[in-house]
Amino acid sequence: MEITLYERDGRPVAYIADDAEHSIYTWDGHAVCYILDDKIYGWKGHHIGWFHQGIVYDVNGYRVGYTKQTCPLVTYVEPVKCVKYVKYVKNVRNVPYVRPVFSTAQASISLADFVRQDAM
Image: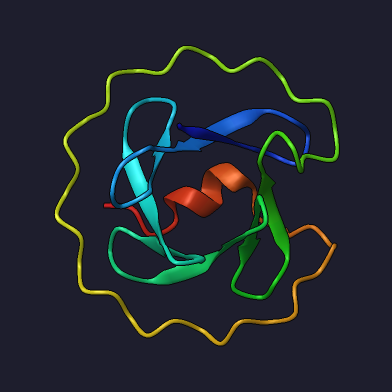
């Protein structure tokens, strides 16, 4: 089952695909990052954050995105998803950061920019 990820204002931005790699796609059909265990990696191999208990955190432990169940505001209706493009080959993963204490504070980066920061 695919899981939609929302900005802090309730807008749907991306979704976690129901595939073996837990790829994160934007609504336009591009795979931009993926989840391994609870770590989020960009396609170029950089560790960019965590997905923990339905919340997306950046590497500093600030909140970036939410699932429908964890979003602090009422969520918007999801748009129709585009056909998924073929994924690029992933680069070798870098060593992950040490997990910080997760904060309730919001990150300064938007979820849309966060998921695309290490894409091809």
